[in-house]
Length: 225
Length: 149
Image 1 (cartoon, helix red, strand yellow):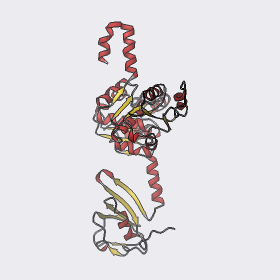
Image 2: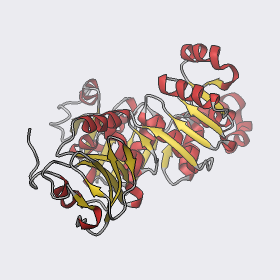
Image 3: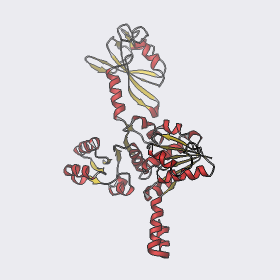
């Protein structure tokens, strides 16, 4: 693949390095002269100096033939514009944008810049993973497809504990897709007995969380401690 | 007419004052408190006493735009010192808040031209300067050059 990356900060530089090691062709564009000179010592001709929000700079980098454009500058407006021009002017099919401020994710979405990745958002999710509220963790939102995947730990006194999957009355629009146990994860059959301490992954239509959670927590009430 | 101007530098503040003087309702949003002084300068009364509104905040913050009254704006002018900021907030005004008239300042002629083609009303001071310089240097011969834009 030919990949154009705009922004040679820590994210951009490391991305370029990794992608080149995987034998992709990469151009990394950086607008700060001093930063560019540092990066260029390692990446040589793969690094280009210029403002990646200027059309001619993108054209010089060969954006017309890029399979993917990744905008990871420190400015959300710049990342939005770069991806918008990549997609709508240069008809690049795959774009990835970095949202520095998670509050700006709504603007990326409004202007069709997807996927937009926010490190803050990812870390927040990891924190939720470490400190699960009511034992439920959001793993993935397939927003466009209106689906979610969540992870739940089965509590000792949960209605589902000790029952085969077929007897757990999951609401329509949801499905247990994996069971994670100390000896590894597997895809359950209807006969698989869910045990207390298991972690189950459930795919669901948004909005069913509460109904599903009830099967896997102690007495139907969230544990406050 | 209710006009919302984001970015009260030399251009934004001058347009704001002229709009107010013309008897329209005007709201200004800027992240720099100094820009408020620019609005007060050379005026008999303060900006607020003259009927103007001023909101301190950054353009990409929806709360700031709401406070500045974007929901009832008839005209939205994006005139901050950043082309990309202007182009993003102009599109937010148009697509999210359905502001009937959106005008955006873009210094880079190429970006201005492309976004104009995408349906935004762009004003490019650089392009005007280029034309004026060409006329000053080349006289009547500049016509052909300017038309190429």
